[in-house]
Length: 234
Image (tube, rainbow, N blue to C red; front, side):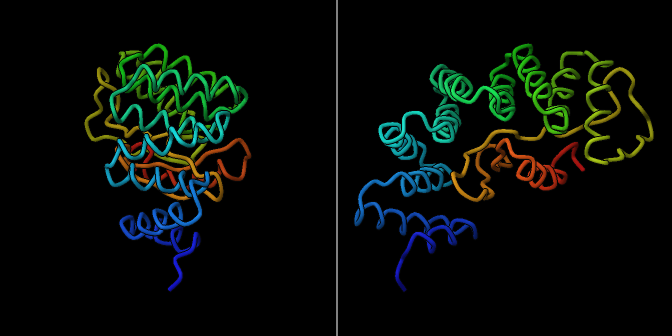
């Protein structure tokens, strides 16, 4: 069987990461470090936990396409996984500066800020994302999670209510509501991921759910349908 790009992508989609890596290694060796090959290989390496190799490929991608916001954002995620958070913040900032009208860029940075403990900064970024896309249930839900964590219960209740309305989710009533700590556990949804420059594909790594969101409504709606099984622990 000829190991083509399509073969590698198929292996990748099926979760056959070792096989996919072999395909992309071969393609890079035969045809050189083309951006599409490096991007897939970096994502596969990240999935396999080979973070140093992944960041090497992302660094090579930056040499080829220094203003590609997908590559910059994906690289930021790997930098964070490597605990190189100052560099990750710089990369998230760069992606946002190059693509300032994309609400996903704000949500990506917000989720990162939440993970590093900058809760107020995360809320501010989620609010910017929501201002650009008022139908973003994921941003509403995640903002509510942080507000609840900070004890802003009225604000978190409003955020959760909007998220529920947007997704059509009807949370089950708890048998013993806890007014002090909210109504029960909710699961945060991951708004940033290693992106795909073509058709979006699922990628789970350190973050549980990774999937592409771009600014067009159709792709966002596809993502929201996918994430309904993750949002609020439903």
